[in-house]
Amino acid sequence: MQDVEHQTPPPSPPGAATDPLSFRDENGEVSPVFLETVSLAIRASDAERLRHLVEDFHESDLGDLIEALEPEDRPRLIELLGSAFDFTALTEVDDAVREEILEELETATVAEGVRDLDSDDAVTILESLDEDEKAEVLGQLPAVERVAIQRSLDYPEDSAGRRMQTEFIAVPPFWTVGQTIDFMRETVDLPDTFYEIFVIDPAGHLLGAVPLDRLLRSKRPTTIQGVMTDEPDRVEATAPQEEVARLFERYNLVSAAVVDETNRLVGVMMVDDIVDVLEEEADADIKALGGVKSDEELSDNIFYTQRSRFPWLFANMCTALVAANVINLFEESLERMVALAILMPIVASMGGNAGTQTMTVAVRALATRELGRANAWRIIRREAMVGLLNGIALAIIMGLIAAFWFKTAQIGFVIGLAIVCVLFFAALGGIFVPLTLNRLGVDPAVSSGPFVTSITDIVGFFSFLGIATLWFRL
Image (cartoon, rainbow, N blue to C red; front, side, top):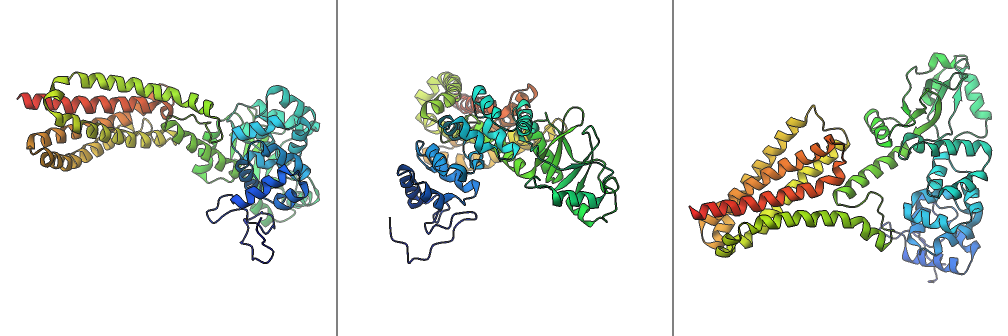
């Protein structure tokens, strides 16, 4: 390692340790020198050195470091750090990485690590375990924490109940503002972060909420009932997380009460959890459009990744066979005019790109509920006109190029007309396919690609070769 005793260290990221080694390089990535230093300390079982390097890291930075380490070094880092390791960092890594680490750790270590976590972070870690290990870890937690975490685990995956924090502040409506403030000052075990006080009846039913700014502006003798909001922002515990995320986005919420089917307050959703949900949903949509499973990560092994991608590629191969049969219908025309074979990939490529553009916009609009029955026909007409106008513009350009290239105006006219047709129908396919799949209850992000590809290829080849055959016969 280089001598850095007399050098001025570069600024460290927020929450980083004060070691003269810089954690991140100039590109914001984990520094190879720092990573090598940590790896050497792990292999030397130098726990003191490791604590000096990483004990003050923010959990996000620690998560990045864990992912950058070799797989065999990750559990050793946690074991060597012991109580100095913040298990919240395991919520910042890929699911596959987290599962691999948890498989290597002792159950007692995991139980001790999740003991002091917020309930939503503890749930994220525990849901990565199998049922036996999960039960064993829960059995080592205090009864109150065990019940709260188990209740969250009992809710459906990707629901508000799984994402919620069970730590919140709730008071009766007859308390005064002064009592409430004194209660918060004197109570040690308060949530780390909160933005409002919830108001409940003796049975735990949600009656209202008081934002902290309103509470602090109110006179101490005023009752909580006098300052509370009668219709607080609330979501059902069983509501899908993407619907909750849209609610936060639409109304600019920072927190919302989570209630069960009887309107009993069971938790709270925070904006930081919603940011994670929005990122996950956007990530899943992008992967689905590319034929990749939503849970695929860079840390997955080769065989899992291969198996997850194979079905999409197989579907594309089948649609390509259909397109090949369309080409076969015009074998005679292709033999007589080599120019058709040269220009044919251009038509197919342009149609595919146009269809993908429309499909991407449509799938995203369906996911965000911006596209529905009320405006479907207007959007269809819009996309059809965009396809037609782009087709005409590109037909003129490509027609002139083809005519100059092959020294005949006829081939320019043929490819120009084919481009108009394929871009128009590609735009229609790109909007109709997602809408139809969505109406049938099928996720359009997952299933639209092969259908749109098939439509654009078949229409592209058929229109180009069909127009060419008719034109030159005439």
